[in-house]
Image 1 (cartoon, helix red, strand yellow):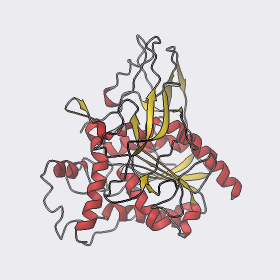
Image 2 (cartoon, one colour; image 1 turned 135 degrees about the vertical axis):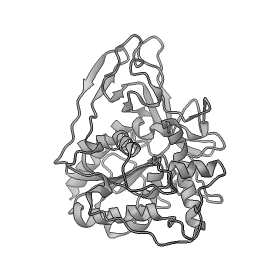
Image 3 (tube, helix red, strand yellow; image 1 turned 90 degrees about the horizontal axis):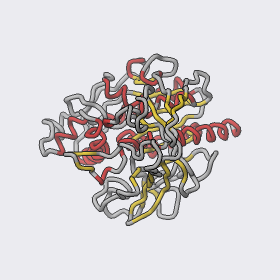
Length: 393
């Protein structure tokens, strides 16, 4: 399946997950053993997808290309616990516990760079698949999807709880941890935060949480809501807080049918949080993006007019992007502005829209690249939070 179609399914799938959790009867499901290394997509010190090359070509506005090296830190003082978005192409309602190319690719884009700041843990889990969502969206749900003998609707969530508890019991050893997720992964982590961490003993281990491509409900004018004692982050060095956002171009704001930017539950008086990783206190700031050099059909030779093809897996474009959290027309979201200059040789646009039938699906925003857009900024936040957490410890 193309990356464009994949991203277009992610959030709707999590909404489907919630609906099924309310209607499907529970049934027994076997639990995974997270003591087994094969139950993890990424583990510290292992040669897996999180140990791949993160070298980057920095593309300046004047067309100059320089290479930025990268390496993991095996002695990183904190941990990161990551739950990936909807990527599985398995032909069943729920995915299996075997990592395919799609699972490996997503951690390359969204997690592996964090290995320069933390030990990375990424459990495999039985998520709702792209196949099941596609079938549901076309009006032909997979047989047994809501049957009494179907897998329990919270199977994927229970997997992540089991992995989290195994991590706490056997790997944490008093270290601070940052939870990271995107889309369906952010939805699962939101449940984990609300049920297992908020107000519980494990909260003291949480440095922060990054929930990208989702809508975290908060009370209007406040920093808490669904999470009672875990506020949104508002200052550098703040710990015990959460970063949550969904991104849209400033030229294509959320339409009335947007899947992001406001609560999806009818009748709620809450709003959704928007935290700009580039400036936690609010206001516009440069986005330090790490974009895939070839994703979404990008020509590796197209980043500079008449320039050489990019040979690194990632590209960074200083000064090209600015982001700020805005509240407009009832939506809260990260607004992304492109500082285009037709006079310089650098590419004046980015690819990240969800496209269906040759047309941009405006309701999805820049969901494809939520994490890429702010990756460098998130790493800076992690650095600041780690320093503060270690100082207090």
